[in-house]
Amino acid sequence: MISEVKPDATNSNTISSVAEKTEKTSIRTRGSGSPFRCISSLVQQMNLEKDQELYIAKQRIEELEALAASRQKEICMLTARLAAADSMTHDVIRDLLGVKLDR
Image (cartoon, rainbow, N blue to C red):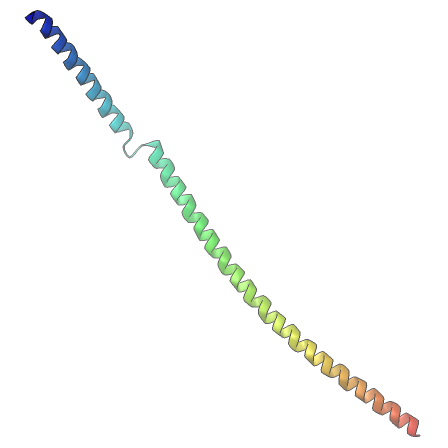
């Protein structure tokens, strides 16, 4: 009976040592050289770059909107000046026609 127990104990020790080696090996492969960690850092870097591009694009949009607003103001001002000049031109033509009719 004792001889039967000893081989079983040896087998269980061998199995547990193999299991421990497998766990240690799998732990080592998941270290800093893990492909998942590498992919994660690449994804994080890509996200940061995309965030920077988005921020720059938003700033550019704000700049262009401000420029468009200032140009729109300028257009309104020039349109008002053109309307005033047109009105003055119309008045001058009427006066000239009045002078011509008086002669």
